[in-house]
Length: 377
Image 1: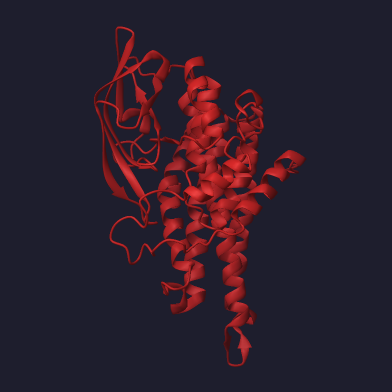
Image 2 (image 1 turned 135 degrees about the vertical axis):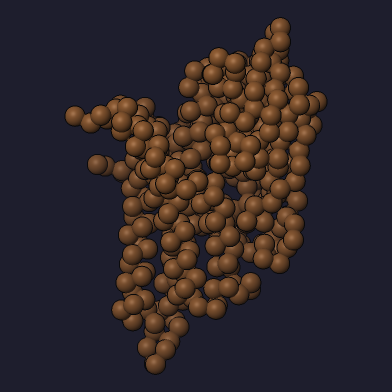
């Protein structure tokens, strides 16, 4: 198995490191001390920097001003963003734009893609269903009414909902198919209600009540939602990996400096063993992430559909990121809970990512279903 990155992918990662180099993870108020959102909107200056470095158009074709790269390049950039807790809708906007490019109408592509790549507009995706525990594709209904589509239902915890110019909403039809609706902000029949994540970011509950869209704003292609869902999940695994790597580095630096009985606590066997276990978690998260990203990027066949590789990556990411931050808190002692030290922010973001990925048991069940449907020879 060779996960060597191409020169273009490495160049994207290096560009991301440059853009994120000056980002402070504690640039906004602490979520532990803020009853509402830590900020009203995303980091616009950073968003402009990403646009200037052509990192918002990684997955777009050249005709839309993009680099024509793949999911692996996006995950490399997301990994860097999570290390500094970058407050930007990079995953959601990039994934939504890629779905429009792959499956959308020519009118939607012309209206959205070039502007997304330049950072002029933001896209997001409603991917958490009505409660956060049920399938997103079943939370909203879509029915034809002449040439238009009419949507009804609720999607919860929509990330960056108040920043997005367009929200991609999965919805199911009477025949059991899933379509993707491109719902503009402040569209008739679409209402947002504030919600807040564990990281302190503002989310939105999106209620659709007889919201009418033209055919050009509804993606009715087979497999579009499944492809977008897998890309979002893999990108979230990349965020979990980057965050976990930064937290383990913080833990190594702290335990190398903190002394007890005249020795750095990093030299104690109990501390070293716990840190080593978390290092193994991160390497497993990394290997399964690149396997999933490679399947999505290449479309290569396998014993299981790509969803199987995504499920494995999600299992490791959801469990791994939780174990990493919990061990970090334990080894930092009371210092880890100090709101003047950034570790508590990483813990809050890690919990948000864990909840976004869902419980590992659910992914294990999905993987079991795939194995039952595709017996291995």
